[in-house]
Amino acid sequence: MTDSTPEQPIQRKIRSFVMRAARMTDGQKKSLDENWANYGLSLADGALNLEQTFGRTSDVVLEIGFGMGDSFVDMAIAAPEKDFIGIEVHLPGIGRMLNRTEKEQVKNIRCYKEDAVEILQNCIADGSLATVQLFFPDPWHKKRHNKRRIVQPEFAQLVRQKLKKGGTFHMATDWENYAEHMLEVMDAAEGFSNTSGQGNFTDGRPPHRPVTKFEKRGQKLGHGVWDLIYQKNN
Image (cartoon, rainbow, N blue to C red; front, side, top):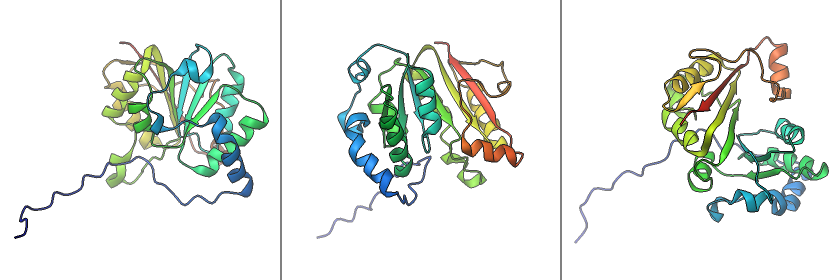
């Protein structure tokens, strides 16, 4: 006798990133292998104790998708009084970032190499972050792919949950359509206020956000960049 119950379709989570083939240089692989124990964090370890992790109490900045890591490290060096947690799934970028972090002895950096939403849900305590940064995420510019964009109403509320009161969510993109999407989602998000006023982007690049090589190339080609900063009110 066979079970005639129809199989239920497997629900697959829509991810905002694609795990592209990662060709690491020997130096990047060596850096990842040698430095992960000192700077790496794991989803499997569960809830993160920030004071134990960094050995102090400080404002904590979490950056989602730091790419090759240069601007992320620059910000950590420029603000030694703060602690920085990076999340990235591109292994060559992690290897490069860790190489520079170790070489320059940047003590206020830690890193995850897993999905940002899962890290926020499972590892970051509510009301613990001073800042969440999301710079130049994948724009998913084809309309049928817009649902993959990480900035959605549910994500905005997840970020709000993890921020301290008065904490900020800082986004930047070089895709105007995505900038308009971010503005629409965040201006409507409960518990946030636009630091530049409803319906406005920031007036130029905030000084604490370094210009990336990627951004410089875009500027030479005449591409615009839009920054948005929202503060958690409650």
